[in-house]
Every structure is written in C-alpha cells, then in structure tokens.
Image (cartoon, rainbow, N blue to C red):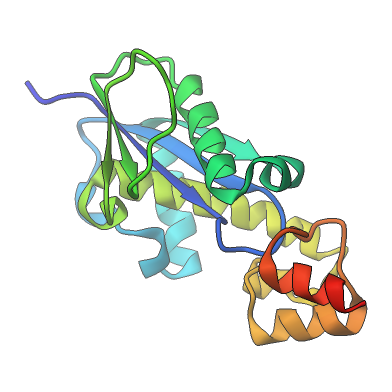
Length: 190
C-alpha cells in the first residue's frame, strides 16, 4: 500500500507585492499524474484547467501570509507560515508531508521532508504549486484592476522592468513590500 502524501509548495516569494500563498494537496489515487508539472512550466490557460481538475480530484487547502506578516517576519518565515496554515487545514489522515525547497515549517509531531525541486519531481508538490499559483494569480489580477498602471495582471507584482518603471513614475502602493530591496531603495531615495 502506498503512503498518503501531502505535497506543499508556495508562490509569490519573489514578488514585490501582496501576500505569499501556499497550497497543501493529497491526490486521489485515480488522478492522472502525467499532467502534473511545476506550475511555472505551464501556460496560464493550461494551469487553470489543471487547477480545476486537481481541485475536483484531491483534498487541498490554501494558506496565506499577508504583507504585514511578510514585513514583520521576513519572506522566508512568512512563506513557512503560509505553508503551516495550508497543512493545518488538511483534515484527511496522511503519513508524510513533502515540501518543495530546503526549509521546513516548525510543526510538532508531523513527519516532514523537504525536496529540492520537488515541484518537478513529486506529483503532489506539482499539484500544490499549481493550486497556489492559480489562487494567488486570481487575487493579484483582481487587485490589478485598481492599480492598472503597474500591470500586475501581467507581471503579478514581480520586479519586471515595466513594474519597476511604474513604481518610479507612480510611487509605492500600500500593497508593495516595503522591506524588499527594490522598493526599499526607491523609498530611501525620496
């Protein structure tokens, strides 16, 4: 009998805006694992379609850490907090939690293992990366309607040339992570 695995991944660590998201996923036995890939290797349309498929054929949960938590604890610890929140929402019994990367959240009495490039190797982590990415992208796309000049609907808050130029032109918003170097540098020049 195979182990019941929870796969966990986060998204949004490198973004200059908004919350960091994590997802935790247990795949149903009958799911087609061949279609599960690292979310970054899928087109947006394909990612959204697979996201819906995973959600219908899995036990899953989302965890978030907001901007204030990112500023207070730093991005790594905020990511681990988002992961902890996602894991704790999973109510089905499981044997092990596999987490993308090289850091683990501190949750007592839980068997966990970090897997470098896990989103490319472990289907449960790939599924988590897809759900986390689609969920965060939806949030950022909604917010971008209010902040059209920053093109978040295209760059999702990452430090693209277009986004950095918009910050220089229109300023830093309440959604920007002030402790992040590009934002901090812009603010310290003023």
